[in-house]
Image (cartoon, rainbow, N blue to C red):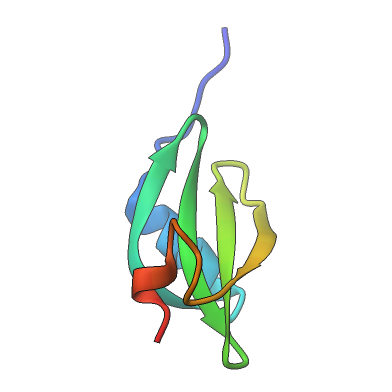
Length: 73
């Protein structure tokens, strides 16, 4: 039996902020992680926040992005 520590959107935001990202918009639950739009050093990134404390910067995001573009300013 595996126990999972509760991990929600607020936890995902806290994880991203702890690594220097400004959070833009709300986290989106996907499978076993949350997707977060973060901004760091003037650039936007899609981040995947996992319950095990890992934050993965998956890709840069621009205003033309179909998923996050409306939040890029």
